[in-house]
Image (tube, rainbow, N blue to C red; front, side, top):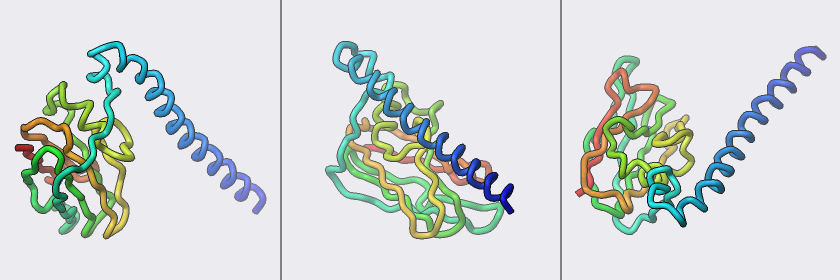
Length: 167
């Protein structure tokens, strides 16, 4: 019993340390990138961009898991305007998240897309939503017109992908 308790305590400590280190690393990266933004036009491409607020309407996209072999965004393709937002809501199945395709996203837009994604787990990748009813909202403020491809990381291979067209 003592050994199990110690193992659990050690595991909690290690997991806590990992989570805390990641958060501090993100803060340190932002702090180091901020001075570059003031003196360099290349800093925007490096990620030192402020999140843009929602100034328009908010649309909803459902995250649906029909069975083990079919998951989807509903609607799969959505059109918004700069300043609008999208709220993705888990209807069934989980975990789900929103990841913008870094290969298809124009380099000039990646930094703003990333800045507009709250609680990102990595660049262009939103947090995981674990239960029905959980949601994730992202602004499309300062995003230029174009077609942006995205997917759910755990379910991309079974068709959970879509596009956001900004007009």
